[in-house]
Image 1 (cartoon, helix red, strand yellow):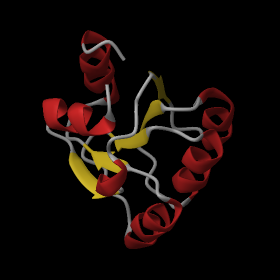
Image 2: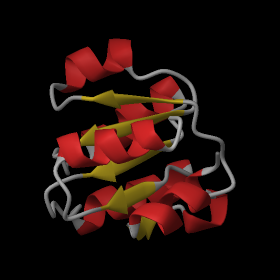
Image 3: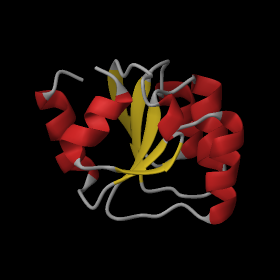
Length: 110
């Protein structure tokens, strides 16, 4: 399943990277500690977090993540969005909790 399909089914908002949303999503990691996420987020994974600072872009880029989903209504700042656009990283947002997002992704086979 690709990121665009996930965003559509879950009603997610694109903050950055919509033009890359055909990227495949193959798994999921939930976590807010960036140093741990660096070792756990894998290629093409959906990463669910509440972190919104520019460092999330670096972690997603290093891991070649499928996308970042910001849970609980968290919104990235302008600097984070700009860096994501530069690095071709997809950032999505949701009012759902990380748990709700994970359950829904699991039901979709992610």
